[in-house]
Amino acid sequence: MVTEYGELPEADRQAFETPLEDLLRKKASCYRKMKQDVIKQEEFVLPVNIKSKTNSIGH
Image (cartoon, helix red, strand yellow):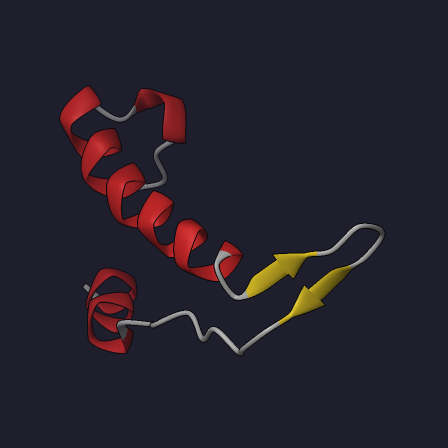
């Protein structure tokens, strides 16, 4: 069953968006803005939960 993002109940969307906003904020914190350039300060790796991916695909 494929559900469109807009069809999700509000509580489910909030449960998805809150951690996503935190990850985006962490990724943005890896960069520093200069007068004319953006400099990457450190590497940010997006954590992936492989167990939940395989469970949702396989079952």
